Image (tube, rainbow, N blue to C red; front, side, top):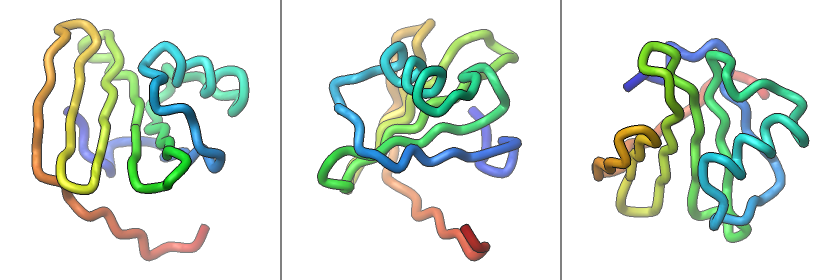
Amino acid sequence: MKTVDSFVNIYLHRDPVDFRKSINGLSVIVEQQMKLSPFDNSLFVFCNRGRDKLKALYWDSTVGYFFLIITFTELLIIRSVKKRTSCIFRPMVITYSGSL
């Protein structure tokens, strides 16, 4: 698992996405709409229409598969594609003090 400061870039997809999309669908959005490579050392963050849920996608090159992080108002679920496992955590608050 990576920490936020270990990513080269963090990209926020501004438009809401269909939250039925999983790793494959979100990877297509990164490649086709954002014109970026999902295999970069970057974190890609997506929100739903209600803007009360987040999904974050990143490629972990050390283990060779994607991670999908899903946050709700009360839980944080981290899914591994290769191992098909999930971990559930209490959410953490991420604050950003820089300019956008």
